[in-house]
Image 1 (tube, rainbow, N blue to C red):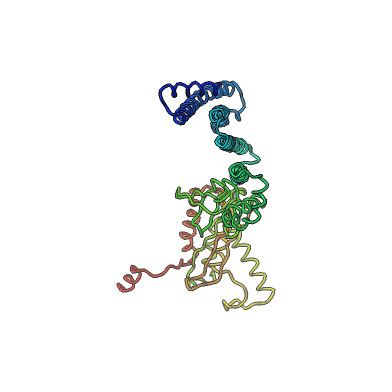
Image 2 (cartoon, one colour):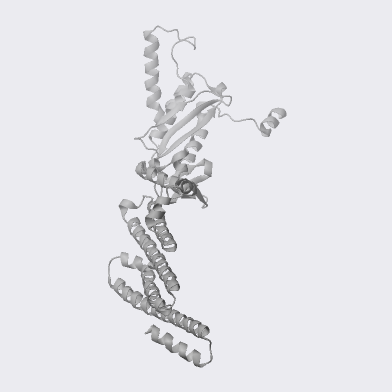
Length: 419
């Protein structure tokens, strides 16, 4: 039919005194334009039929995957195949007198079909990825990385197929040539290859998951992981900024993952106050009597007094000299008080490590460290609990006749000069 229309057009242009060349050329142009217009009409019809029909099916269906096919425009991409096939089926008939042109048109049609099919495959992979992300088993897996790699592999295969069509050579010819350019490919795709290897290692060793709180000072990342893909890991920081970290950096560099804290439901407190060394002393009887009036400390003081008295008697220690035998100190009693205070605190986990320890003395005094775990990991709540504990410690230190060290300020010097 195309041949008859073309012949009729050529006859009409010849009657209009067109030369044979221009008559044939004009007839071909008109037929190409006509095919393109018909192709647009076919495209509109195919989209209307496929989209409306599939939308009705999806609306009645209780499954979610068919809605995703519409969301990711898979059906639209499939609908575009109809006009492409229509145009390139009839186009060779337009150039039937030109064998060379027909050959190029056939090659072009194959390339366009491959590209359209590639778009369909990529969009379908997006649907599969989103379905898997909705499954609990895959929620914390770097699916983005795997699907990006699949797309790259498919893209390379399709690209080689297109090259083989353009060059009119076997596809195996190009795959064989890849051996010669493998070094170049490794250089070009170095980050992609490293990212893929890193993704596998991260997933296999369960090092990071989407939703983990990670801290990586080198890149300024401190927040929740929101995306893991082939080349990068996106971290949403606590200041609401987003840091992009190369995936391979989580293998080659050091980082901190706070998942363990989140899973145990407890967050560590490890903070010290510094005690002035000159305020440390042995407890006299008056001081011990005052300590006995502290409810949580009474049993400890009485038990310790009895233990020390028995120890000194057994060894016949001359207790008239304070340096002889064993005696209680205000600092040791203070540590015992803090330990009991924390053991009775409702926000401190009692099944995890709980210490009040003395660290090595420094130029700023004697560090007394609280090492415990708060059972509320919400940031604001954790900070409030920690602050309340140290508010109490700083306020109660004077009850043990201990001085908290701090560097002298201008007001301290002013006070001394006023005396």
